[in-house]
Image 1 (cartoon, rainbow, N blue to C red):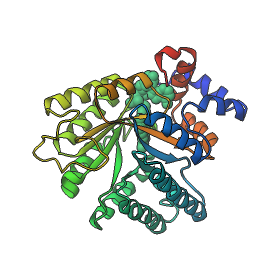
Image 2 (image 1 turned 60 degrees about the horizontal axis):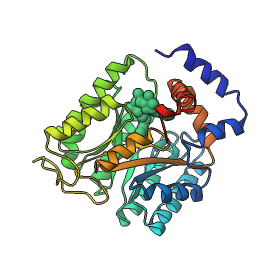
Image 3 (image 1 turned 60 degrees about the vertical axis):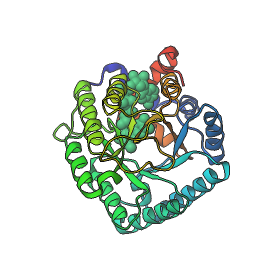
Image 4 (image 1 turned 90 degrees about the vertical axis):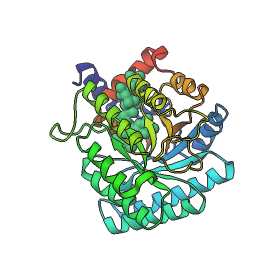
Length: 325
Ligand code: FAD
């Protein structure tokens, strides 16, 4: 249930001047340009983190915009090579045109994944709202069937369909399935998703269990201790962990630039002490680095989509000890 405080924050922030929103979002967005994202990654590389890079922008209105995203991601790939970052790409399928022209969108995504494959780089399809869940999964299935296995998607614990999606992906891809599992940022209708905090945590943890049992690669994207702790105990029950070859009999081979069957993923600027703790314990820890000219639209849209973020951001500023970058 979204409280009055969250609503107040949303109402206030969307009326704030751009400079103020920029000031608040500096912590969560690497900057407007690729150079700024590179600077952030250089700093965090020194802490031992690896990355996934997101060029900000989602649903587009013309295929020209999709071309912009394709070209920008090619620049990102070149920058990763040039600086030797341990990084992969996160893309929004709708920014590549999947909703306005599915065939052309697929062509754009395929081109990027093919180029990434030549560089031995992984491409993650971020999961957007429920309108594109099936389409996004279908893109991954189609690319794998074409021999492009350096691509995987995100599943959202809050959706009722997620366990069935894991089973279907296991049947189609076996141990080549490579997931990011998160709670899901979009507040979806209650006929297709859990809406209460505890139900969402339980469903996310159940999805994590199902992924581990299927032998898949599991990227756990959460800052929430009940999810992190659940993952840590699942790891220990499978005798998985830092520096140990994945012992699951149904697991695929060790993947390049990946952890031993799993990794943790956190957003830039969120719960730094937790990220550093996981790193110090030896876990592979990936930071999601969003950057781009569309930082303002991204910040406001995310806030409107999920007003509880407003509370979290406000807490991070008013009570910084609860959420250091
Ligand atoms: P919460 O209970 O929301 O957060 C736990 C604590 O973390 C909060 O109390 C707060 O202290 C802190 N916190 C969390 N988020 C923030 C924030 N934004 N600002 C400040 N503090 C915060 N969702 C999708 O739908 N599709 C995706 O493709 C997707 N990709 C993601 C990739 C990564 C690497 C991560 C970490 C998340 C991604 N998400 C995605 C978002 C995810 O679904 C959740 O909405 C988000 O992570 C918040 O859930 P939580 O598990 O961290 O738990």
